[in-house]
Length: 383
Ligand SMILES: Cc1ncc(COP(=O)(O)O)c(C=O)c1O
Image (cartoon, rainbow, N blue to C red; front, side):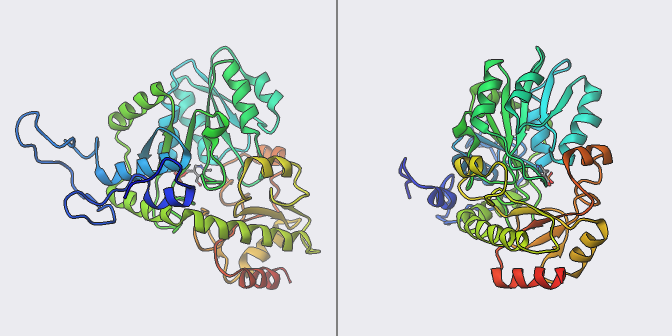
């Protein structure tokens, strides 16, 4: 099997990075569950010496996701947070980062509770506003960390414009692309420098693995991340690499259904009298709908809606039958959650208020079940 240079996204999902196993011809990359590799003689080996440093299953996944993001090289880590930590390792004491103000709570915690102790500072900026990004750049700023759409407020950042203002001041741009997946958005194509994922979510897609990946483009980033991955050692296991490889085979197909179900549920909720507001970039009422249409190929499976009070939100999340009340997102099964008390409980109440993250907000990760069943379930819970 040889991929042509113009192979399209669904074909890359299934084939990129994967050759039949050289030992047996197995069409699926085996789980190379080994810690070390036997060497023929001193300095004579097959390119594999020790499994923290190199593992064929992990290498296949890294090549696969690098191809999906259109990047040069991937580096798989034990979790999405370990991937964010790897990117943060590009910073040194005295450096400054700009981070989106509605960033994932774990990213905020990493910057405030770990990196700040090491002399790295961060400013939290509403990156929907490109002028605000430009204004926040200091002489010591080295990194701009973006999420688009954000969790759970569904705010977007114009990636090409953000990359342009950052690059003018020599600031590297990294995008946490977990929410969109490369099926919907490829940040490197907009000029960003690095992309990362919690593979736990859409890339694996089956809610049975924790993992993370960074895709790099620049030679200096690739060199550092190769060194760091081995030096720090927080690698993705062969089994988890294999699970995510299996997941990415169906990424294009799954995202088509996540998009369709997300849009359908958002439209249903927007017309429901008990719902005061719906946050979904696919709705024409979303203030950044035009940017979403230009920057994304589909609007995704994530949406949030406001029930007006914590009591009303509680009733909905406790009355649904098909939606599971759980943290996380991006799996084939639909999940529902209450950001203020679950995913964003670690965000101080005044920061939540400033973001508009109310106690009545409910978040949905639309799975790929039949849309009629999902809509009926929400309808009975709301009634
Ligand atoms: C946008 C985003 N980035 C990073 C992470 C962290 O990933 P992990 O839980 O795999 O460490 C999450 C987890 O929810 C997330 O939603």
